[in-house]
Image (cartoon, rainbow, N blue to C red; front, side, top):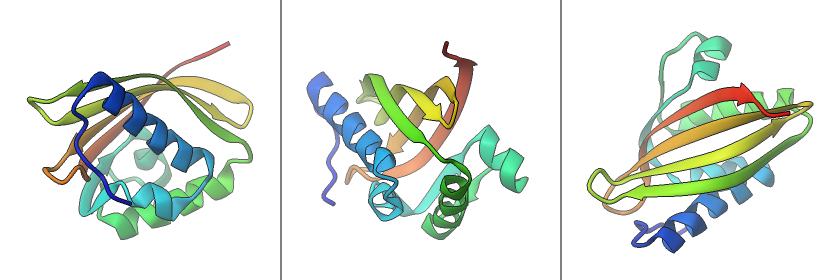
Length: 130
């Protein structure tokens, strides 16, 4: 997968939807294609599942996400908004995550390197959505 930095709001939206499409297809390799080899990922769910404040590298992400996807029967991410901060090279993806019977608002902050690969990411889950 060739990645590039978003240049416009439309590019940011397109990139966010590509990210969500990878998740919705449950394609771990497609998901990982967005990330640098030495990526750092932080999520309260990763702390809960693994007891670690940060997962480092694609191998750690692969193991975590394969296990997480095994635990989830139904998964769908619906992007609501994508925000691109060119000064910080950060893409924020606001979405609704449907995980089995739960729907939750979430935000993923993706810090991109000069080649458009995710160098750092934070996933935060908020309030349930009725």
